[in-house]
Structure formats: C-alpha cells, structure tokens
Length: 210
Ligand code: ITT
Image 1: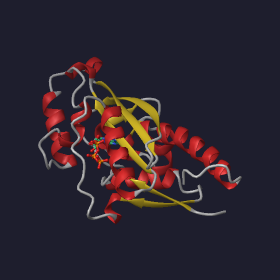
Image 2: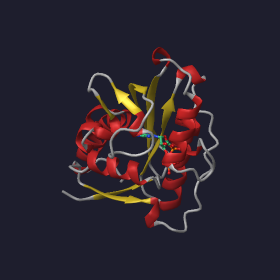
Image 3: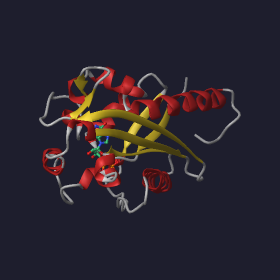
C-alpha cells in the first residue's frame, strides 16, 4: 500500500508522541511543523478550541501543500469559570513551563474543597486538506485536580489530573492506557476511522485528495 504524507500542526512533543502512537498502524508518513522550519507559526487567538485547531490545521496545510492534523486542547475547571481553558499552554505566561502552569493552578485552587475540584480535558482535532476541505473530531476526559503532583508520564497538567474510575493520575498511566481513555485518544480514534476510510477510497483510485 502506498504511504501518504501528513503533517502534524503542533510543536508540542507530548502531543506529537501521543498522536504518532495512535496513528502508527495507518500507512502514513507522519511529519510535523518542525520539518518545515520556515513555517512562520500561527497566533492562537481563537475564542474556542475549534477555532484554534482549525486555524493551525488550515495554515499548515496551505503552507506545506499536504494534509495537516492540528490539536487544540486544554484543561477546563468549572469552579474557576472554565480557566485555564484555551489558555492552558500559556496560563502562567507566554513561555511558561508545565511546572509553572501547574503551580499557578494549584495556588488558585488551594482553598477549593474536594467537591469543587472537578475538571475536564477537552480536545478538538482538525484534519484539513490543502484545498481547504476539513473534518473535526472531539474528545472529553473528566477527572479531579489533586493537591500534589503524582506520576512522571504524559505532559502538561497530567500529574495533577486524577481519574477516579482508574484510581490514578493521567501521569501514572502507561502511554497506551492514556490514549485509550483521554480526550485526545477519543478525538484521534474518530480521526483514525475517517482516515482509514479515505485511505481505502484512495487505494481504489477514486480520490486525489492525497
Ligand atoms: P501547539 O499549539 O503547538 O499544538 P500547545 O501546547 O500550544 O501546542 P494548545 O494551545 O492546544 O497547544 O495547549 C494545550 C495545553 O493544554 C497543553 O500545553 C497542556 O498544558 C494542556 N493539555 C492538553 N492536553 C493535555 C494532556 O493530554 N495532558 C496534560 N495537559 C494537557
């Protein structure tokens, strides 16, 4: 089977690892924006996750003339009015590290009782072809924000995101396990079904999208 190229419109290593693992068994050659150092980047000024994901996927597909996959995701804490939300990556500042973002969130939540520590991760994945045709896929993962970090896996807010049904934080899950339950895993599962169908379609010689 011919291998098709796609470009991941993300520079986040944690996302890249998880997306590559989820799509590993498709006949795809997966590149990232890092393979296009002259790509100027995208300002993430959208009002919601979809707007940012679409903007990233569209810009990379146009720039590279290849199909692109973007992920916009974040942690939503209803007791904080939805924060950090679309600002999750830069919650503690423009170049904030995961540790600084966690520290800021824990400080803001320090007086919140257990009943108000519910949170969820959300993810919108957009797949966009160079001509502009696109599809989007979503996922949501519910949990609780605990008071101290637990676990070394994953990235971002994973060490403080506790999943009651699993009895562990997202950072205590093996990578395959995180992909099985996570917001990103759910969105990518739907993308994968979509891509599997399109790849079969291409194999039968009826589409020029790739
Ligand atoms: P790109 O725009 O290059 O994809 P980014 O990190 O700036 O990378 P986002 O704007 O989508 O991406 O921000 C997502 C942030 O939400 C991410 O940096 C984490 O802080 C948090 N996040 C998203 N998914 C997560 C996950 O699975 N585990 C932990 N934190 C996550």
